[in-house]
Image (cartoon, rainbow over all chains, first blue to last red; front, side, top):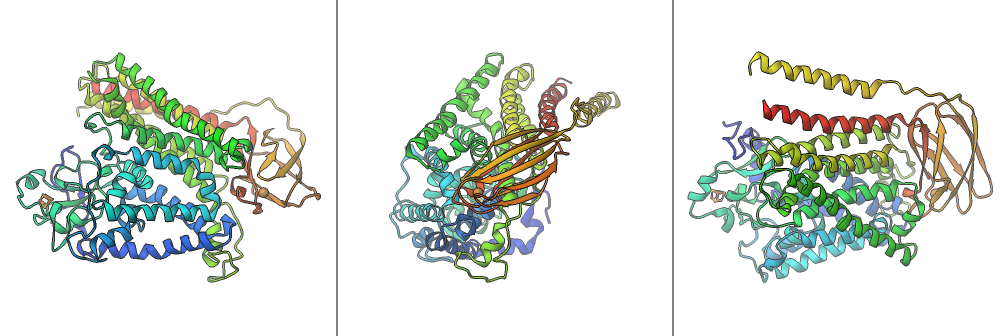
Length: 468
Length: 154
Ligand code: SF4
Ligand SMILES: [Cu+2]
């Protein structure tokens, strides 16, 4: 049995997980694997929506708020994305109804799609809609996080859009180009120590029938419109596991790898959308703790839409910082570095490539934020599980469980350690980009240090927000 | 790797370790004689006034807590103080600020939509944790940059 898979393109060691765990492999190769996980999640998902629509308007007593924005969010940002990359996309119930309509079945329906199956317009095949969608949610996040009906409306809206798009467009067009959650999960999944790849790209080139694209009796053609033979980063792969089932050459593997292997790889074309995704996510992860956990009540009231005028000021400031100020500062850092280096990159290319260095710190910052929020408010889950709608039920006898912040004296220390790890990881990523364009290393320091200063400044801002 | 290539790396590691230890452990002297302080904190939807309290380490803090609209709570992170206050009935409690750093106080009685974000800050100075963490961030960034240069240039 092979344990270390063959040399990968980056010459780094890989550990073939399914090769080592035949039981798990059998499960994953079953056509029922993804649908069953989705069905399992559909129940709490439906409960969250029901509670949001019908339950109490007190967010902290409503399953729809507590389980989505405290439990799910913390699991997603602290465990799933950093540990398993896009695994959430494997189990996510949001696209499930639409996908099952497309397939006319839940487990192994007809392989031919019965919906319109239009191709997504070329101009929209990027992350801009996901960026815009995320910013829209972010601008309303304070009420989404606190008002059950608004939160439920967002989930219903996302699911409705997913169903609608499944009827019109092919496969997982919604997930890949529209879903605001899928966008940042994909971005940060590049840090994860897990990947789905082909063992040997040449086998794919030589393989005529390419069952992973067409699908066969063992599974569907890739719903994410990916050709596994060319897959080289987690962002593009929805981890649906279909190609593991369809590949007739046993060429698809799930590897454990060193975290962050996808970062610092060449960015194709002139796309600047992914760089903006990284900037938007990092910036929001700084704004959120300032607004939500900070002592500035006026800003909080603006964000909570207590008056339209106030919210407009907040929205304008928010968009200016995320779309102009931070990208501008990062652009300055990158261009200053490039002036003194001999990499031969245009500023725009360098901006795209060095944006990868924002990803580990951004993820660390989201982890720090989510850890703080979950430790403080996690105890609400006890009451909410016994009384999901706030109607006075007491299913598990925990309805009266009070609010108790966990680890309130150690949380800031934990957050500081997470942020410092993110900073180190990010500076290393910037160096990786620098050395790739300047193998002699002669001017790498000049090119990278302004980026490192930018990263350090973000980290210091975060440390002062959490500890200062 | 040969012996003479390995040695400078070890030396640098030792230096780095010493710097990190220094950043974490060097005592920051204070010239402050502890005394007793009276503070009044007003709780209202969804803020505390004052939003930020600065205290010196060692001070004894006598808090008078008022609520001006509905019932609120006051939970102080790190000190695990929890109090509940009804409008018109002040609460009084005392604690000694024996730990430095920033500690948030949060409402512990659900008081409306933004209740989970009804937060104020107590800063017990000198705020050693934030200074040490910041210095550590600078050391970490510099160490990664300089370490990489040495590795590549060798
Ligand atoms: S079916 Fe397998 S070998 Fe063939 S192209 Fe797809 S992944 Fe490669
Ligand atoms: Cu309150």
